[in-house]
Figure 1: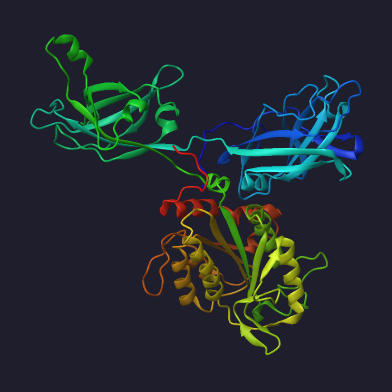
Figure 2: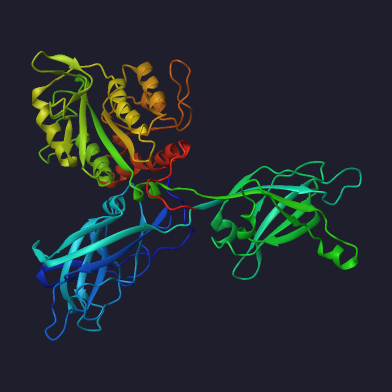
Length: 568
């Protein structure tokens, strides 16, 4: 999952006021247009840099004085989040002010970048000339890292030759430091035995007080301890500043909590990093009281830094910004238990509003995933139906009836192919999952050959009933758990989905019929009935909540950094 950043409180957007602008554009203005957007529990922040070219010139005697306003859709309304500075007399501005926004993978975060020519000192946008706008999702920006698009007017026509360039960067210090420590000839503190030493690491806060960052384990009965290597975030240890002073204290452990002080020293990450390439760093452990009392005092032992390594703890957003594509495939259950699609009681019956539970599930997941696939061409497969002309049962067929090219253009293409195929197939059975899982797994296996974090495959299976080939499905999932692949299962209708819960390894490790354990949990199951009366975005949040963590877990296990990544 994305790396966690602090507890900075976000600005809560309330009492949005609709303002009618020229060109009949309705915007919403927040009373306090500053601060990052999104709830406090958000997992990461993205910095957006904006520049423009060839803006419209609205001033008579000089050029426009542009500024950019960022809007975020909240509860169906576009609310102002922040605005840049104004650049005077400039049709090609590069704004120094950055937009900071909280990023949620499992949500569609709709953004609008609106350009205005400042004419007055007023904060009211209708007082300024409109220069053009661009609308997109945050997901589309971070998946491309950098996008350039034309600006449009409120009527959809081009805003002259004006363009906007938006660049995304994750705001994080995701470095971690791994230290391997030992001691030599530490002071003996126990009357009838040797010491039981442990170390404590401290950093200094803004108030000057020392804050505990890490405590090692206790090594019993020794004056020459060797502690296990440990890893902490660099931000935790030194606020990301490698020159910041760190204090290390050494104690002899006592059961009553009254640990005996052995000694201390001060250092920095920069000095600790000298312990590399087989070369250790030795530091004297000093007891200040003993040092004052005895002229002959040298030290209370030596602390040895055996090795120090700084690496990056990559987040989901690092992999997306690095160029990883999410490859989306849909599998649809066309078994007879769904009912005749012409009958309103059927789960495949399309209502006059053009929806059913299958389509709702496709939209909920697809509208999120499509931002992370550059060509937006998605395979859509069906199973459990008899196909013309010979009416043989198939558990792995292209719903566009083109087996050599099962790809659909965007989520809209999937929906169109699904609707078009319904009258031409016969619902049958049984409900076999393994063919479609193995189908996607073959492509995921080919992606491994790239030896790069370039592609991750997501299979959405929508079904109404109990799995018929449970043994084969369990085996297929266990094998797929070794691949860059996740499976989302959405159960429609009111059937008993206990078997689906079994595949979702949240509470237990899934095993194949051979006894082989899944390498990781890759299945997320959600029953649609729990979301029938909930806002539509609630379903997508539930089914996609675990996906970022699964992506990161796989690539980390394979020791694959993002394709385009910075060194630590």
